[in-house]
Image (tube, rainbow, N blue to C red; front, side, top):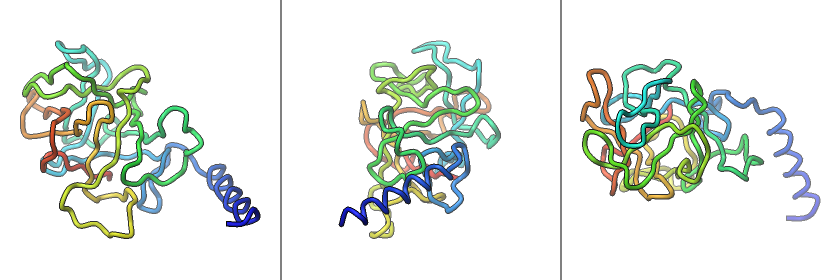
Length: 201
């Protein structure tokens, strides 16, 4: 690519970023850094939800993250680049890209950590964390054996994906195990199975 072509591409990217509204929905059906999304667990049909003031009584004591039928304000997440790469705002997110998910209603980050068991199954606890650290970083992956367009690596709405916790290697997971009457447990899981499939909607 010539210097003139590189300069043109950079100018295009700068224009896209200046016109991009953080907190907007994925207008083209592709998830970008800075978009808001809902995450739906495919096996249970429930949404990834957190609620202000609802904390785990044991474990870390941080804010709960659960599976719930409600697709209201408590199920909205903002897709952000990792710290130090804020220049990627408005860029498309694809397989193997890393990102953070900020819970819009409370400002907390989707988070997990080693050595703290989830309350029902004893898998790895997943929380919404009031702060920023390396345990807030997740990676988008293709689900094994799923047929995707081989020329398309982007995160589209409604396709099944795996969301893996970078620091521990465990997958964002849910199942029919009830946390209480209205909510399913959400955990970090060793390995990959059908309960690791999520879709942005």
